[in-house]
Length: 113
Length: 112
Image (cartoon, rainbow over all chains, first blue to last red; front, side):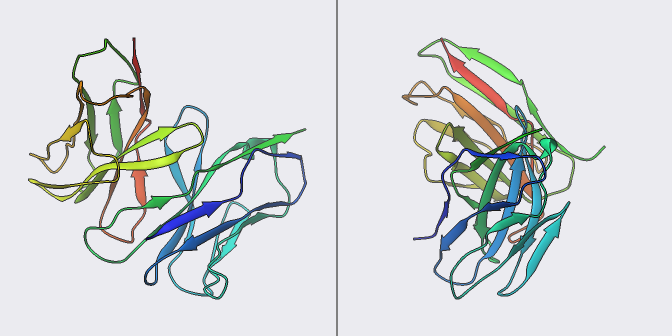
């Protein structure tokens, strides 16, 4: 079946540190890949996406590259801020009717000053 | 403003009672979704709907029911058959497959 696996959290970093959150997927076909972010007590917001192999999604200093050969979509940021503290979800879906987003379990990031 | 609205934000229910969570969107999206979020479990799909008057079960549909009588609305009923209903419920909508999903602020349901 189709699934997403994220690294276990929590991830605890100091401000300005480099961030990597690993995400790998299993899919029957060629999915689109997403990163969503959830701030405390809120719903999810799209952070970035990539729809085909070798695409790089980027937003607010975050980046992720769709790697078909390693079935991965790791999230990176060069210098994190306290305001980046949140839960990050990796997700996939397919470009066909009747499909929904499939999420990983989420990774909690805590950044201290 | 365009968006997706869930109500109420907090909901308390006695065991054995049914309760309905509201989800309304004014984004003119065809697709709508309900997810359940539990600590350490991520988001699990309960039900989804691609068009009015049609919906499909997700991975954990048992003990839940939905309706889609209008494009804008996709209410979720948590029935007394749901064995462990205390959770954070998220509604989402999307223009179609492979597009960005927009989420509501969520409803936190607690069974007392």
